[in-house]
Length: 194
Image (tube, rainbow, N blue to C red):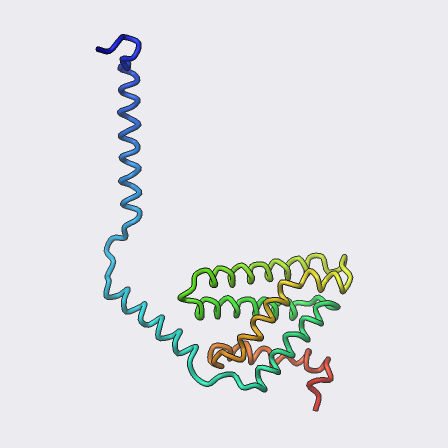
């Protein structure tokens, strides 16, 4: 037998009923949000196959020649060296291009390993922040301090350089063209003079 003190009041019963109704509505909304309506599985399958085929084509083909890989590697490191002493839009664009290329290649090559994909994203974000910090504080930093600020970019360049030797040239063709075709960098260094 219940006593008067433990018996819920009408106000408490209505509040409990409203709370239960609200939580049931939220659960139904969550279920509806999780399901996608009017999805054509054939269309999804076709687009997924096309994406996989494009990635396979990009990563297949002839490998980057040793000469091209070495030239691109030298250009990256010379540009990084230039970043210690000069700050211009060409160097910023170059660094951003390499970061974007590494992000793309990370997405294409790490489809089976989500942990590795996240580490590529983190490294690219860290390098991008380093370039922004370098551009912002360029006048306040000495060349050695600039090199320390650009260390994440240096790490990204090292990873990209190692990837050049294993990757097909179709995936890297645009980067190779940009790296080899930088006239100001070629003119400023004796390495590329005939």
